[in-house]
Image (tube, rainbow, N blue to C red; front, side):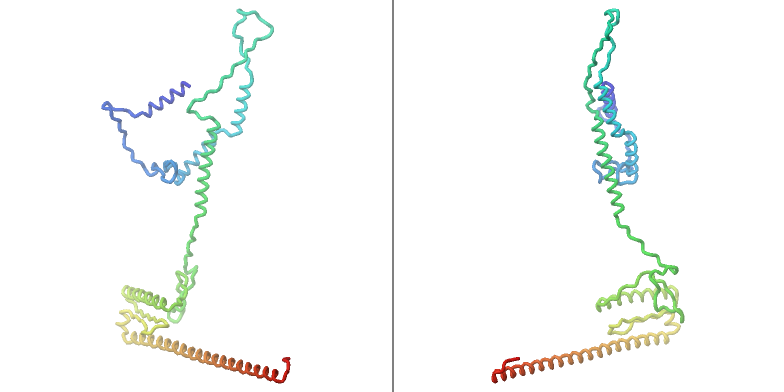
Amino acid sequence: MAKQRAAKASTLVESTPHKKRNGGTKKGPIITASRQDARCKRCPGRPLRSQCIHTKKGQQYIAEQQALQSLREPSVDAMERGSASASENDERPEISAPLTGPEDHPTSSASATVPSTTFPSISAPGTPTSSSLLQETASISSMTSSSLAQLTLRTRTTPSHPKPPRTSAQNPYHGYVQGALRGTEVYQIVRGHSLPSPISENTRLVKQFTNSINAIVEKCEDLSKQTGCWLFIGAQHATARSGAISYASPRLRRDAAAQAGNIGTQFSSITRNLIQARIQDNVNLQQQLEESRRHAEEMEHAIAAERDSQRLLSQQLARYQELHGLLPS
């Protein structure tokens, strides 16, 4: 008991800050806290990040502390056996030695026994008992293990997005560009992405065509300016009412101005004929639809007239039967 009080007093003396002669406290050296010495804002109690469960070093530290705690703490069975043996020793009476020597008292055949007086165990006020210490360590270890299990489950359940496949000549995942030629032979260009879905709405279609073709023509001009190549491109959508869009590189216009103009004119006439043919097809389909609708209306009128004639015949038949007294069959 005296040793415990002395140790507590020494700790109190060590923790007391040194005072200067003028009454102020002695300032220690300024220590800048690193990131690992910072406090965690998510954990209760705000422990150090190096001892926190949200960092790798903290998880390693907690695992090491659990391993050391499991080695230091006795098992529950051992503590129960120790408590049982201690209770047996307390209940067993002790044989004490004679208080006086043989000179003072005469010897007797029977040895005198004095039962030992058992005093209740007095524990220090700040020292926890073994059962409370076991309960506290078990609760701390269960909290730590549950936190680790939750963190592991959270990391496992986090959806990991699969990486998109990398296309190459050996692995053309999205196929090749169709319609590309190099001379008279097919020119295989590996697609870097999948083909988009067609747009059915006319307004969105026209807007997408205009934005995309403007960007493509700009890229063509950049390419022709950088490399000085001969380049021609033409585009037109099926519902256009204006002329086709075409572009010829500066070198093509310089070296073959007439031929470049002819190519543009031919492309424009081709697309115009296609649009007119499409319009004519639409007109023909519209005419066929009108004829079919007219024929259907005529058939409906004929069916209605036939129903009216049948109703008149039924009325005449009923009148004749009533006139001649005939019962309906």
